[in-house]
Amino acid sequence: MKLILFLFTLISLGYASPLFGNILDSQALEQGIEKIDSRYTEAINENLDYKRKILFYLAQKTNDKQQKVADVKKDSHLLIIKIKNLQKDLLKRDYMLLLLLLLFVSLIIFAVKIVKENKLYKDLAQIDVLSGLFNRRFMINRMEEEICKYKRDKTPFSILLIDIDYFKEVNDKYGHHKGDLVIKKISTLMKEHTRNTDICARWGGEEFIILATNTDLEGALQLACNFREVVEKHDFEIQTALTISTGISSYLANQEQECVLKVADERLYKAKEKGRNRVEFT
Image 1 (tube, rainbow, N blue to C red):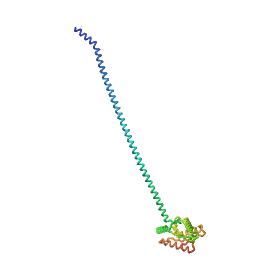
Image 2 (cartoon, rainbow, N blue to C red):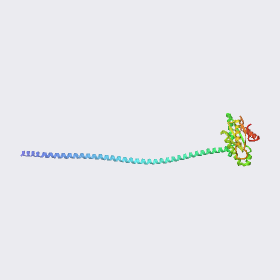
Image 3 (cartoon, rainbow, N blue to C red):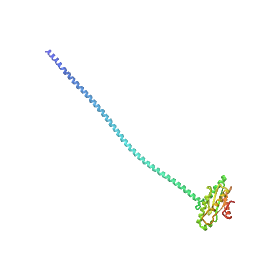
Image 4 (cartoon, rainbow, N blue to C red):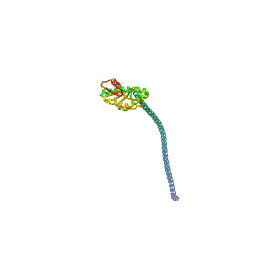
């Protein structure tokens, strides 16, 4: 009986071992599959976590870029405002510079105008209106300068005192208008037939004076004779012959201006006494 049970057990084990092995193999497979699924799930989860991290990083970068763009826009807006303010300041500065320039130009124009007016007033103060020659006051000042020059470097000068002969008859016969024209014409001839360095002036009435600079008595005599001939030959468009008389005086050392003028006046009077239309120098 025991032998039969033993054999039955062996036979049972013989048949049961493959089945048991299969059972064991299926359990191992299931466990392996579970392990694989677990690892795959872990890998998937890890991949998802990695993707989430990447997405979070990209989102963060995007936000950063958006913030930077917003900052750039804000800075650009502020920069535009600054540029506009700067443009306004530049316009104000340009406007001020323009005003200053206009003011400067106006001051220059005003200064030039003042200078011209002063020169005009000065010229009017030293020019005889009728003849256009220098006046008596200017000639007196100019003679003083020549006296100082003579005292400094012995530069000679002479004066020619000239009077129109019978000028009263011209006024009486042809009127003062014609007399004024005669004075103007003689003044023009005087400027045309003297040197640029000579000073011509109307001394008063029908009298004229020429200051011959750097000229001695001989040179003054030649000038006076030439000018007398010019006046005598000129046509003044009147029937009466027009002539001049001249007295010459050269400056001597230590003379006063009044003395030089007195000598010239005395010699002019002598020319009148001797028949007019002549030059006296002694």
